Image (cartoon, rainbow, N blue to C red; front, side, top):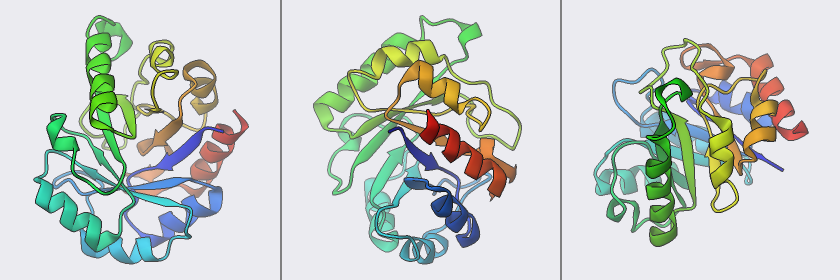
Length: 215
């Protein structure tokens, strides 16, 4: 069964909605000057309220290792996702699973750019022991506007050789088709289940998880 991660959680109410809907993981974005930025002080009590089999994931962007480790400890995170330009060496030395994000240009901009970057990151996963690679749009952050999905057909080529988490432009209306085509280990959604940046829409969250499980 494809796993689901609801990212951009900013409050306990949205966390409880995602958990009730059946999400496997929740994402907390510790990146300053982004629409869904949260502090360790905000996240720690949310994580304490989670049931034991829901994974809290911290999202970081070129943060120093000491900072990341401090947030892991303070918030009791059980996985970390690196969204910046971290090298393979910078992905090592953590006591929790590491996810590396690969930013993918829209299909209209051509596929030649995509393959070497994904293959490079899959080599990092193999050599450095990353738990998964997350394929996302190359847009920095959504301010609530729709995002163009990445190329699912190409993503499928890599889903058999590694744990691929599919993200970028997913919604309750297209996640079923995305899973059928890409066959990912997991799907990740943020703005696609929001009522506004930083606030989740309960109906969209429930429908997203339901469609992902059905697929």
